[in-house]
Image 1 (cartoon, helix red, strand yellow):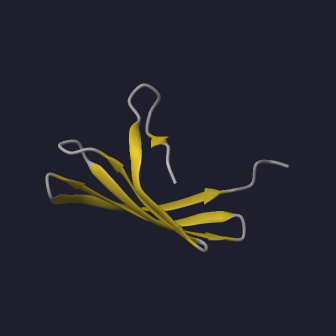
Image 2 (cartoon, one colour; image 1 turned 30 degrees about the horizontal axis):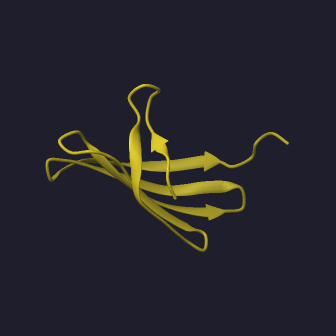
Image 3 (cartoon, one colour; image 1 turned 90 degrees about the vertical axis):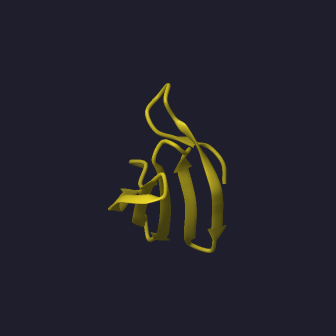
Length: 73
């Protein structure tokens, strides 16, 4: 898994991307900026899980992620 994430013009590369069955893990960011580690699962047409952020080795928070995989068709 490769790509970028973040706002246009300021996106960071996706690193450590791994897909195993319906389980997806990856990181976005580059130290000294915050790095977010995502642990997601695909179920039906939803991508769900958590994102945990760190900056300089310190936790900056955790967020819940839920995205629809339905493209409107």
